[in-house]
Image (cartoon, rainbow, N blue to C red; front, top):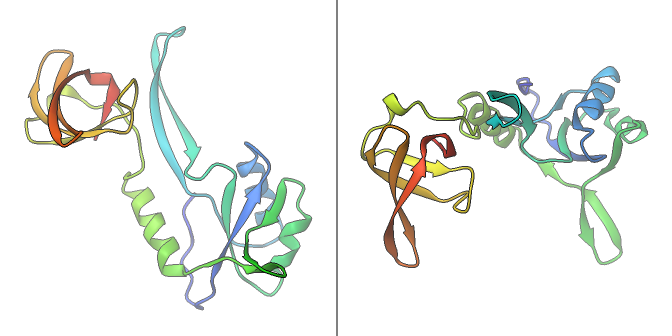
Length: 177
């Protein structure tokens, strides 16, 4: 779901939803006539039982979505799957809702559209020494490294850990670009 362009300079507000109900909350808010944006990323994983690769979309921030400010945006709190609007904390209690500039939301949208958040498997034929890859499965999840060599089903990565580069052998299906 991509964020629509906003020319009027209004801010976006962060809305919290019930666990795993982000899409239902989006549908409810959109039904009210509000502009809503749920940043997502794609993840591809191997299903062991079915023995095939599956691609799914997940929320970038589980439990949160963005709603464009408008005259009637407070109706969002009446939605069944919405729990609250995030607010800044003050000494006397809850402050003003936390606003995000439209330029920041458009930057997130652009990054989502270009696939910067995606965790997709790599095609061994496109990987070459010197490429930067990130491990997305296993003990080194989240670690990024430089490709040293590419084998038939394994990639040798140089990962910077504890002040030095460690040579690590990782199966191709566990790395992403």
